[in-house]
Length: 319
Image (cartoon, rainbow, N blue to C red):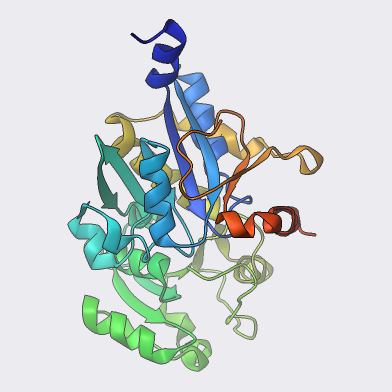
């Protein structure tokens, strides 16, 4: 017979965002703010692991009710899921996993992060001329969402072949990056799905009429350049919130209080008091309640824990 404590523990639901690196992620603050404000008995944390396969093993072993998936695991987790939504299949990446009594289903809500961020800013998607930078899962999600909304989409990538492949798959156009400077005047919106330090627009004179949607909620090269050119910049905070709202609905079946979720951006980790936990891939029980980050390593690599934690802290806090 279970004790009252056991019943209390079993009623609490646990969620995590998986990535590598992951300490920088604001997802726990967004979700935990809603949990606290709406009286939901749940905890959301961060887990760094080594592979997409390990993500799935940990979700099962720790009995997580759901997970958010970020770089570099959006594609890697797909072969190990029990089902995948049609949208995620078309996009080629999963950013949300729901655990329904042991059946793991993968979804992609990133495209909502793109389209809802643009429409809430007052733009109409139909006929909007959009340039998407980046051919990874976030870029493909942007192309999918924009084209579904009726926008005219062009994709550009450092490796032209990847952009051309996506253009064929989705029926949009591809543009070599070296030609952006000559073509930029024909776009209403630029969606950057690039890493923060990548900036193929550094030598491009952006017309101030262009709106920039940046996937990064930390300062990026594209965002800083766009601001200097006088463009309207929609930061990755809106992208993150809008995709998180859709993930929350998949987890719980109802809308979160978005104002509570937005408050999460004002909650910052303290560099000198990070609560980090080491766990092995076969761990069944660990205390996730107050963990800022869980670092999953094979037993033989446990000695790397402090090195990895220092790397995470350095990346999250800028050295």
